[in-house]
Amino acid sequence: MKREVEREQKLPSFRIGVAELEVLFDRLLALFPEPEDVHCSIDITLKSEKLEFESVAELKRYESLKGEITKFSLWLSRGDKRISLRSSGVFGGRGAISAKADSEAWCAGALETASSFLQSHRLWYHWFISSPLGWVLSAFAYIPTLSMAFLPKGTVIEKPVVFAWVAITATLAVLYVARSRLLPASVLVFSKEEGFIQRNAAQLSLLIAVISAVLTVVGWYVGK
Image (cartoon, rainbow, N blue to C red):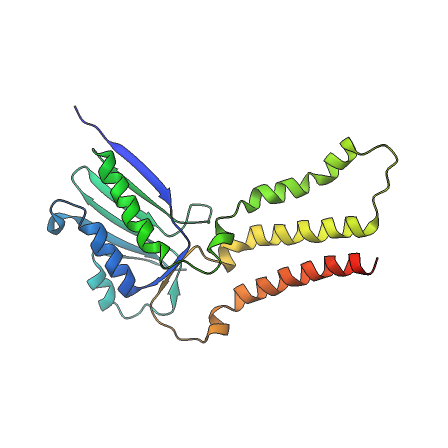
């Protein structure tokens, strides 16, 4: 009889350097009975090419990678035991780690090893990446329909309320569409060639846009 158990877990949004990647890689490698016989792969996806490395040491020797990478994955396998870690989902969002083996305990240990390590390297906006923004946007989009269904006939909705709904819904829509691009779920840093403002220009712009929308809504109510 052959038994295979598969477990998967979402990862916290994180930012690590190559040194931290090596620590994580070694910890996952140590979970296998014979680490020296484990087949390993580190895949990095760039705009126009895809790179594959067999170890972190090989990755370190490749000097062409600069700045930050947001699309990468780790693969480790030996026999019936496999671990894969992806920096983001198919449609964006948080990354995930999955483990396959004949033991549920081994899979759980692999997930916990990665998750606990990356918890200490969480991004400042990790709470926003994991928030159910799509559901919130859908709820706001249905507010007019629900209002027509439940409010008494002839009820006049004041313009400030309409403007506030439009502003909030539009802001949520922009955040939902752009968050995976402006706020990457996972970041692998190879070099810090820019200052804080340059590195976080997109995030800061998004934050300013959100604050502006909120202040606009508040201004409508105050000036009412």
